[in-house]
Length: 105
Image (cartoon, rainbow, N blue to C red; front, side):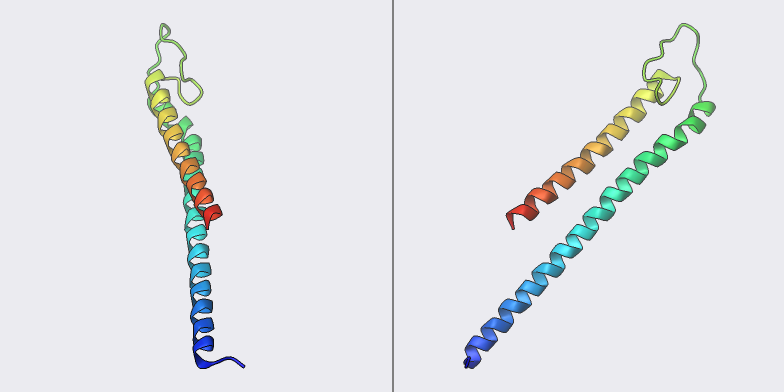
């Protein structure tokens, strides 16, 4: 039979485990939502580029086609590629940081 102190200690230990589990589930949920929002934002920007390009169609025949994946305007194309790369880098960095921290605990 357990003493009152042993039961109280076991109860506190179990409460800490439940609290830790709830905290880690909440953290993973927030991370998943952040990653999904970042990917959705990148996809939406990519899908909206044809409309933006039509409004800013200023390409002259002597200009090159650099960054023409997203735009026929080289400056706008480089800006969009830079922003998308930055957002993707942030998403991957946060994901790796969370994975590494979860493996330690």
